[in-house]
Length: 422
Image 1 (cartoon, rainbow, N blue to C red):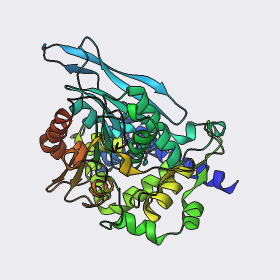
Image 2: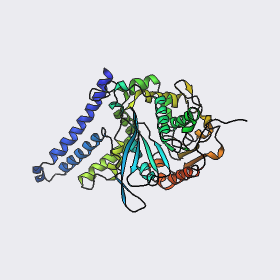
Image 3: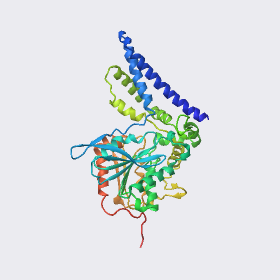
Image 4: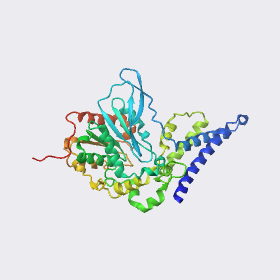
């Protein structure tokens, strides 16, 4: 019961701050205050506006915001995110471009389940939709999933990816961003042995912790330092009475957000102080850089507790993927069974979340894959977000990934993940 009370207390604090912001903004907008030549009135209104928006965004799922796209014919074509596979903990969505002929390259973009919504990859989707059919894993907020739907851990996540890949068929190119990279590699290996006819053509792993110990970071150090009992006691709570998932154990989004922001508290504090001053001077807008970034950054979702705990224990502490001992439903998944799927890794030289060396470790695990089907890229000067959503992605990495996909799109579809010895 105390875990539910703590969950509801956090929501109460968030709700109260949103109310305080709305109240300050409304009071400062009373016409008679215009008679007082006091800058504090404008500052109070600005503080209220920024505070209300900040705390309101924490519980709102952002929209994809991709309304239309200009095709080669010079006309704007509407873009419709359509759900093609619906499952309890996540959906597979397809970005349909109305009136455009199907594109030859079919891409499955595997979004992280790490606190933020799949819309974090909005700019990635927009850059790929130009000449690709783009599908994205759209993970759901755990607080909205009834307890009757059951558990969801790293094995379930892997099986969801297997299901999505089977649905899309073998002529698919998979791109996994950050957290899902190890499990996407495992899902591909699972298909190589259990359903080789459903393997994708290529697999691109971007900034993922395949081997967290290859290059230690603050994230990996935390995983080593804290025991599983401490994590379960301090990070996991039960969803409160307000939501459909009441009673479900989760790693709350608000708690995750507090952890994110504490890592760069000074920078975030300065950003909000400067935004309040901009609002007071009338220089801010709904779509200014601050709001565009924080509307997405502040929108957090609850993560199933069993997924969070099993990720820390099995991927980071026990390094089951890195040691090639990961199993699904009691059966070992051998990454060495991947023999036909071309694999590329992408890392950022300045990535402080998944540092260089962690992702490229995947290539050493692919003992059954010919050298010509392996590739890697280290982007100079790029941080974690830059390698999939920033300038580095748009100008350098995206062309390299599409070239890799193009070079491995010809020839027969993958049929078997097993090497036949005569």
